[in-house]
Image (cartoon, rainbow, N blue to C red; front, side, top):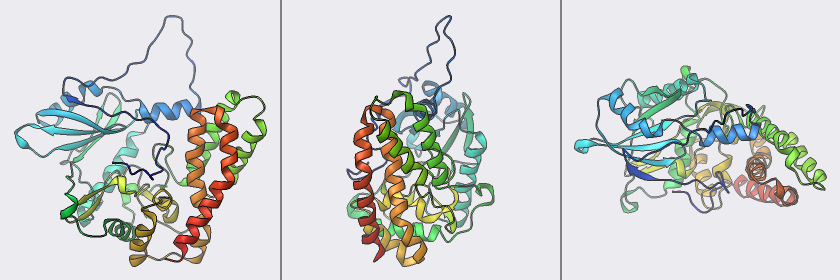
Length: 352
């Protein structure tokens, strides 16, 4: 469940549904005779990667055939993520259906991460059996065991501090050999580091420039300049990172938090990978307190925190702008306040 202060994909309307195995339907492309093939823009391609999945209506039969199981219900949990309930009270599963545009090799690296974490006993979702990765209609499908959340009364105290400490321990681990790749970007936006994410954002702006209202050119240039100058974490020490260790991606069990959604985990600047949770109005301080118990940040990292927090907020602002180019002027006016908020949050966290 997303907390009101979370910044992840703010402004995006994501509809979820629950139905029996015969009720899921995917959206098909419409082809009209004589229609010219138009290459989608960088931003349109992003939206397709984020939201378009094929064969959702046949996912249950694919899983039944692949694993010899009986599926009773499929429920959408997130974009491309489905809970799979089985007959005879067998343990539920989670199926992540990736975009067809995402290379299968990237999903193989995701699986390598999960197998490595399982081997060392790190609290993360576990792959389902030896064949957890398959292909369905040209899309990689990664299947893991469903983790049930414990009632609040049965969870250990200080769950967000525990989450921060767990991420601190993660940053001290070796990067798995099968997943030694640039990481830290939100995988919905880009593969790689936050610097790669910012380069993708520059491409989004290029693709919507023609839709910017006349008279807003100066405001648009200010946004483009801010993106070009934004700090993506280049040059900072790197570690094994989860790209988005926010509370939304943790299941709080009786034994403590368990991190899920390891998509695109790998090697990257550790501070940049934590910017989303560190921007949170409610989770940042307890998370950093827990993190600081097991890991330390150099003065250089702390000095760059404000810039990294600004970059994370800027990426979200540009995403919303590209959804509605009429908001160029309002977005440009927000740049100053966002810088101030980022500096204030960095100062608050610096003392921990």
